[in-house]
Amino acid sequence: MTVVTCDVPGESVVDRTKVAQADFRDSYRAPLSDPAVGPVDLFHAVFGHHPVWAKAMLITRNALARRAGLVAPTIAEILRPNVQASYVVGDTIGVWPVYALSETELVAGRDNHHLDFRLSVLKQMDGDAARVVISTICNAHNRFGRTYLRVIVPFHKWGVKHLIRRAIRAGRL
Image (cartoon, rainbow, N blue to C red):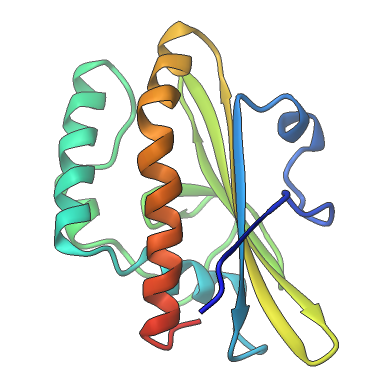
C-alpha cells in the first residue's frame, strides 16, 4: 500500500502558471489495481468515502467558512453527495465544480475571494501498470487565504493520504 509524495505531473491540464505560483501544492501517487478505471470513478473511490469523524470536521469547517462569507458545501452535500452517472465540465462532483474532464484527468475546485484551489485526479499508464496522482493546488489572494492555508495544510496533507490509503485497503483503487 504505497502512497508516494511526488510533483504535480507535467501532463496535468492544471494551469502551469497556477502550479508555479501556488501558495500551496502537493501531489500523492498510488498504484491502481484496475487500469480501466477512469478519473471520475477514482475521484469517488477516494473522496466519496469519508469516515464519519471527517464528515463532522468538514461540516464544522464549512459552517465557519460560511460565517466568514465563503462559498462552502451544506451539511446535506457533505452527508449525501450527489453521484451522477456521467459528468461534464460545469457539473459539480462531490462538492466542487468540474473545471476539466478527460479520459485520464478530472480537475475540480473552487474560486473564492480568499483563495482558488484545484484538485486534479490523474490516471497515468506505464505499460500495463496504472497509477493515480492526486494533486492539490492553492493560490491565496489575501492574508485570510494565506492564514487559512497555514491552519488547514497539516490536516489536508494527512487527510488526503489517509483517504487514499483507505481506498487502497478497501479495494477501490
